[in-house]
Length: 412
Image (cartoon, rainbow, N blue to C red; front, side, top):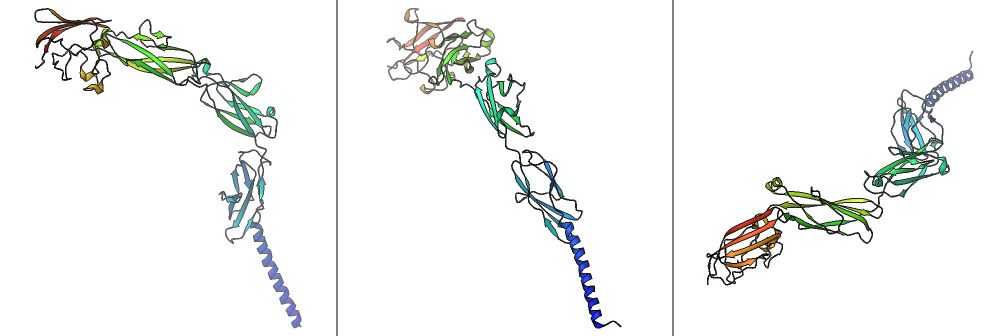
């Protein structure tokens, strides 16, 4: 017969065994969640920018939370691809979805090889015109530093065609100005760093061009050119020349203030004139050439000769004024004109190389004569009436003859 004491012991043993079974099952379940030791697929330290994989054992019913230096970086699987630029701590939290049990990994430190530092120096400037030989003379030197000595690194220029100094891959040759050039430097670990430099050039002079006049005429096609070097104190000119961009035998000049005649053909005159883009090339002391432009035009012109003037001293229409039609001078009154005569109008010799004006009375007697008429004849106290004029205006295209009558009205 079983005694009460034995029954008590059996019950106690049963409770113990039940508890033990529960604990075994519990800890077995937990162990699945706590299998979160991080492993890496490459050796440490590694190179900056290198992509590597971190992982923990697979778990079908788990979620994964990866962190990089404490910040969540995403990733919901047991592995993740990452890259770094400096030593970094990674952790992962693995959670069983059914029970909510979880584990967190120990911090996993990933370190990098020492940095590669690149110093780029332009050894030689070049001209800005890369299409010419003197625009391809820039030189750049790269110097790497870090764990190794400078000459133990490997230098790879992104220059096409590749031009490096003989026996010295740290120096790139034959480069153009105002461009970006890149280099990649590698060490014996296979790590790399890239840097870029923008090449500089010799300074170009600051030139301003002038033309007097900007608009010339078929029968007086001479234009005087000049320039100012606003950077003269810092950038001297070693040479310069003009190209007038026409078919004239004297289309070029090395003078500082050349005068050039632009001769139009008949078709160009019939078309209303021609625009010319004049070129000025300046050379600095390094032989670099810079091109500047200035536009001028040459047009035909028929003079406007009035048929009446009133020399009564009131300041209005007091002289026999021969000039271009006002519509071509940019406006009415003095505002639109460059001063030439007393009231700001161009005189006939602005449009022709030479002029000769003769005024007759109705009997053919010469009342006035001038071979360089300046728009200053006020009638010479002649009586009111009709007078006749002949104006011979000469230029490279021959002589234009203007004939007509003009009435003097003094009103006194």
